[in-house]
Amino acid sequence: MSGRHETGMRIRREVLGDEHVDRAEASKSDFDAPFQDLITEGAWGTIWADDTISRRDRSLLTLALLAATGNTAEIPMHIRACARTGATRAEVMQAFLHVAIYAGVPRANRAIAIARDVFAEDDA
Image 1: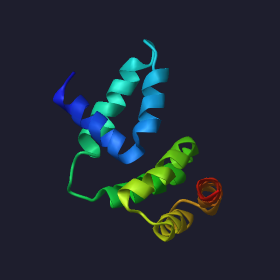
Image 2: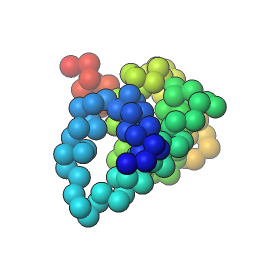
Image 3: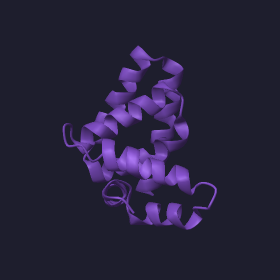
Image 4: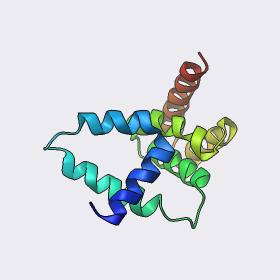
């Protein structure tokens, strides 16, 4: 295991939580293991490991990018990560409002609906 992988796994756990990472690791197969290694080393061990911008800002950027590109499947995971990165619900809304102006109202509307459901679930 490389140093980047170890760093990535540590940061992934800090941002997403042990429960999420344990579930992902338990469901990993021989087929998707290379992809899991790629995101652990590349996303978590490189991008998220860089401290040029804060984890809070990275969370907001990630949410805006996911919404703007229509890649909504990971929005709930990253909404929940905000509790660990320090991004507030008001800041999440501002990120999605930014998406509405620069990437389109339908994309922002979908992301806001997802966030609303996640927040309601977490509040219950």
